[in-house]
Image 1 (cartoon, helix red, strand yellow):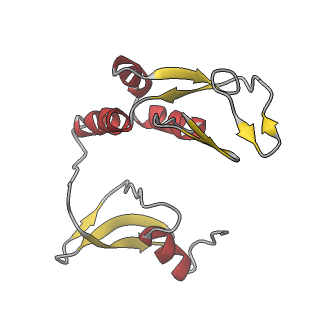
Image 2: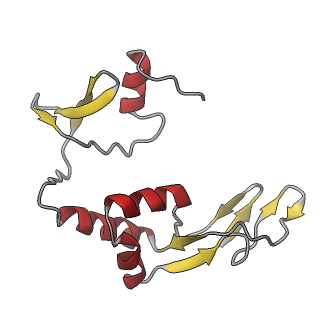
Length: 146
């Protein structure tokens, strides 16, 4: 593990607790599947040392833990659970031209070949500076602080 001022940098990704809880609600049993794939439980504030510009942060117990696993496995396990769902279609390596937005909600995507794919849930993992957020902001549907 390498440390930088204000940030912990590690080769093992950990999930943010709120995201972990959301994924568990959407994909029941995901946490157990992550542990079966070799994940480790990390007690926040106890199992790793954190440093800020003032030096080491004292040990604390915020009362929760997070799950740590190699990135390839952390991506594979949820993907496998999603692929197993009967009402879900994943399209790998499919260029998306844009997001279809209706009344502030993403309701599908338009592919680069012009095909429109509507969906009850669209997962956009491009981040806060990605095309969906840009479209929502441009259309006045959302206001993101930088």
